[in-house]
Amino acid sequence: MHAYDFSIVAPNSKGSLATLAEELGREKINIEGLCAVEQNGGAIFHLLTTDKAATTRAITKVGYKVTRETEVIVEHIEDRPGMLGKVTRRLADAGINLTTMYLATDTRLVLGCESISALDTAWKDLAAVASR
Image (cartoon, rainbow, N blue to C red; front, side, top):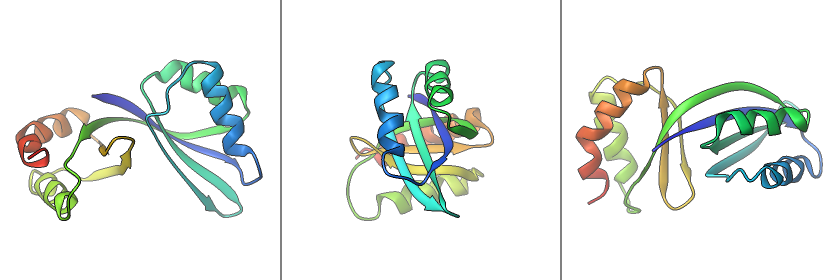
């Protein structure tokens, strides 16, 4: 599946994530994955959704800034030791330099790179390994 990873700068304050999550809910946007970290006194969110336009509007509406938006692939992987190493080694051997990678809901791996078509092709070659 293709989706969009939004890198968002938000205030590092009580409720900043809640404010965004509530707005996404009002707009009926499902959060497919999320990561939040504190950085330099602010908060950085990586938000994964499938509706690019509506998500952009929701982020803008709450006053947060999108610093990067990346089309990514989201694929199920088997939850067992060593699987991430297998997947990332095969992608590296295929010449893929990942720029985005994290786990989303339901043991799904989020992967982004400079060429989404190259990543799609490489994933097709290793999908059977990742889901055994």
